[in-house]
Each structure stands twice: as C-alpha cells, then as structure tokens.
Length: 526
Image 1 (spheres, rainbow, N blue to C red):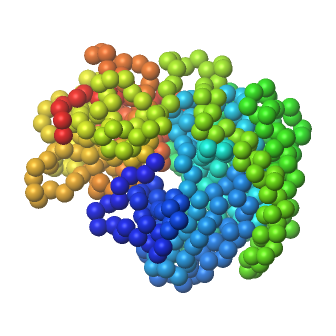
Image 2: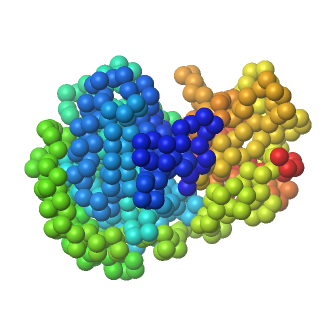
Image 3: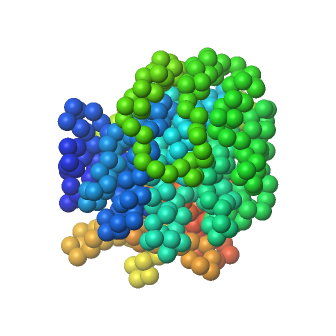
C-alpha cells in the first residue's frame, strides 16, 4: 500500500513514473513506480548523502550485480539499478501483499500448517539468495510478504554496501533490526566476517515470531534485547513439534554450528512430515524448486569478483523455469488464501482477529484496518480525535512549550489529533497549531533518551521509523464502551503511561502485556 508523494518530491526517475511512497528507512525511501510498459515496480532511492561517497557507490554496484543473480522465486526480482545516478537507486519487482508482520499483528500467530509454509518459503528464498553469493542482513517479518502466488522475501542484496562504507563505520551504524540480529553482528571487532549464518539466525527468530507473536529474545529495550541475544538461550515457549528443533538449531550462538539454508530446506521437506493442510499440497513444488537451486561455491560472506555473465544467468533460469513456475503457483500461502493464516488453533486470546480489508477506503484510496464504528472515520483520517489513556482517564496532549507529550484533561486543540494512514501504520498529526499560518504541520515522534525510556515529542510530519505508529486492537473496551488499542512503534516499543515517572514513555515490555491502552474519542470533522 502506498501513500501520496510529499509536496515538492520528484514525480519521475529516469524511465519510471513515481506514483507514491511505500516506506522509508535508514537506507533511503522506497517508492511505488510504473515503467513505460505500465508495470508497477518498487524503487529504492538511496539517501542523498551517499551520492558523495565513492566507496559506497562501488560497493552498491557490486552488491546490485550479485543481487541480479538471485533466481526470482520466493524473492522480489531485481529489475534495474543505476549506481551512478544522483542519488543511486534500485528497481525491484513490486509485491502487492501484506507483510508477515502485519498479518501476525492483525490476526495473531499463524496456524501450524501456515507456519510450516512460511518457514519453507523463507528457507527457499535464503537458499536462492545465498546460492548467488548474497547475504540478506535485514531479514525480519516486515520483509516477508504474502504475494498472490506465495511468499516473497524483499530488501535483500544491498545492505552490505551501507554497512561497510566508511561513513557508517565511523558512526558505528549497523544495518538490521536488533531483535533479528545474530550475536556476531554485535561484535564487529572480533575479527570474524559476517556470513550467511546471520541470515539463518534471523530465519529462526522470524519463524518463532510467526509461531508465537513475539521474538525469542525480547526485552524492554534494544540494548536489553542485544544482551539477551549475546548471553541467553531463546524463549521458544509456544513453538512445538519438529519445527522447534530446527529453530533451536538456527539460534545457536556459534555461527559455525548453524545449519545452512539448504540444510533447513532439506529438513523441512525431507526430514519432517508437513502438518496436514496447506503445506501438504506444496511440498512437491518446493522440493522441485529446491533441487533446481544453485549450490554456493563458497560462503557468500567472502564472495568477491564481478557478476556472472548474463548468458549464464539466462541459461540457469531457463533450466529451473518449470520448477520455479510451479513454485510460484503453490509455495506458501497467497493473498487469496489469507484466511488460512488465521490464529493458531490453541490460541486462547480474546476476540477473534479481523483482517484488514483488501480494497481502498472510499475517502483516501488507502486500505485501513477493519474497526468497529465509530472508529472507522477516525482511522481513515477524516475526523479529529482525542487519544484517551483508558487506565487513568486522561488524554494525550502536546505541550505548547516543551513540545513533549503529556497527559491532560482533553481540553483545547493541544489534545486533538488526526490519524494520517500510511499503509498499515499512521502518522499522528497534532492539531494544536491548526489555522496558524506561522506553524508548520507537527506530528508525534519518539525521542531516544540515554538515562531512561524514550519519550513522545513533537516531530516533523515525515514518515520515518520514529514517527510511524500502529494501533493494535486489544479486544477490550474502556469505561465508555469504546474499543481500546495498544499504541506502538515498530522500532522503539509501546506508548505507555508511567505511574512511577508520571510521564508518557515509549519502551518495549518484553513478554509482559503493555500497561496502557488507548481509545479514540471523536471530536468532529477535520
């Protein structure tokens, strides 16, 4: 799902028309584009500051050449790139489907059959990626999509270019999401090179998340999560059967002791009987695809040299064409079969989850999560709202002087907000300066503090990791019978009221339930 381009953004890039924004992260912005033949594509435009780094451009070109060699089944195919453009960009197949993160967030943990299909699909993708000498480096649920034909893994192939540039080394930046990073990723000074085993570790975390709705090393902060990854065994409670043993093996601390992607795929398809249901139908197709996968000649962490000739690539792809075609049709669970991805049969949590509607809303052309009235207009971004803290009967407000979010009595425009849909997430726009010509748009964002939990403050209304929030229904209602939600940021954690600090904070809660829930109070049309 895309959102409109920002005012002043370019509408064309080379031979591509830019239609909207798909997302933004530390490496750059992803746009929805259309080529001259009318096909939709995803275009990752690198942050402008990298345009001046010759080392980055060289690594970017090398990584793109490798990514082009990845067979395009269970992965988003690399279609085009221009490392010499200002700024550089990469064009890949556009996958129109929800992410694993969105499905688990909205529907809960996967059923056993769907879980096995996801595990097989990701292992197949990693086998193809590693066979081409590429390491993903940022495998996480948000990068696993349910396409029309099956599982697609996206955002592989160029992370190393960012992580290895001198600019990133100087600022100690590592590409990845903490909860899914292997122990060796946190120890860059140990002399060991990051290898494909880091992706295997991430596979284990992703499968555990899909099975339980939480990551196996979750703590109440990013440093706490990293410390658990380095020193503690994974918490795999809730994950049972043969898949648990595979995940346990993938999560060992020593990268040399982890199985390869090919070994995972062999075990999933040969060593264990798939659970009855969806994956029983797909096993033969996945086996055919596995047998067609290239076998790496060496570890992709050490692969060097130029890309393989185009003639060899075409020959290899023609040789696996039949198996790939079968796989695309059968492997995984596509959008048309999302009902099969429902909550696990042993899930005892609250009311049944409801999936997001597939069609656009009538007001803004974006899909919005299904919600009971009267919240739908608020979630569509057409009504102003209070964000009510149910447990303390107070409302979020943006202080006019400190620009920090506080709990208030709900009076005045400082307590009024508008939700701006951004796919399955939202910008939370403050209406405190509404009508003032000298006041630019202000949204809420997360501010990281060194001596305690993060806080919620005023920020520019640009979609970033700090300003995008999810509203996850709890299944309960407040004292006025309004539906309640958990409010959380994918990178920084849950928005909560701290009774100890008497302040609004943002932090991860580990395996605990967030202490604060929120309801939406309609305050009229925008």
